[in-house]
Length: 355
Ligand code: SAH
Image (tube, rainbow, N blue to C red; front, side, top):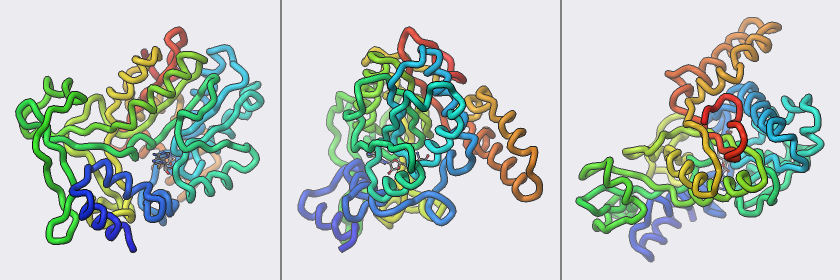
């Protein structure tokens, strides 16, 4: 039995499934899911991420969070949380960088939200000594001040896709054509959740909604608005995205979305407007959406790179220069990736971000 067999059986029984159902099975099916069964990061894996590119990323995000914590009067105890920590690299860099912040480590309680048993194991090894607590969902995070990072977490959440047809929307579904997985369209129906998109779309335009994203943002925002804290949400995407952004990556190259279910990473761009609106509804303030390159430059990545470069030469120096460029340059990750900060309305935004 493979994931393709499972999906084929499921579609024969239930009829065509939504893109969200397909993504959920591909990424997190208990037996065959992509994240459930492996560590996909790094050179031997399928994709790489900012914290895996350079220690500078986790260090700077950590110091930004610690500065917010100081600005808010150093509340103790507080939850130091990460959503989808991957290998635990970002958290390890954050913890090392914040060792010198007086009181920060004594007051923090590390919590990780992670769905993958395989990655939880890697995180436990990376973060041995810090006794993190794991959660399946954000709802079980403690009700206390919350300082949180999430890098490339929201892009892994399942999206639904709709194509506009008059005042209605046809959902894109995955069915079978001659026994093979293939895309199709459901008949157009009104979609109240897409009412606001009737103003900026035309017939034939494709829009995406990520149903789990807003409740997660709202749950974080409620804690931050009530108890204090800050969230740094980093991902690719934009304010109100338009078009098909579903993509598969395998061995660092684009792959067909339907050909190798469970064997490729599947992501979609994040609709940051939906996260910001959910945060607002919960009484939380949000920053302007800020390009990653701008954010990291404001936090001093170039000075940090210079300090790290001082003792290096040859290939090690070249690697550091390339990593700095990759994280910040507009033609690399600098513009595609963006940061949204959440913070209490009476507090200042985290460093590097504007209201
Ligand atoms: N933040 C890490 C890893 C990004 S990959 C980095 O930057 O390197 C996405 C991460 O989110 C993985 O750890 C994956 O297992 C986790 N994840 C994906 N969907 C999830 C869900 N629904 N709930 C909890 N964790 C999830």
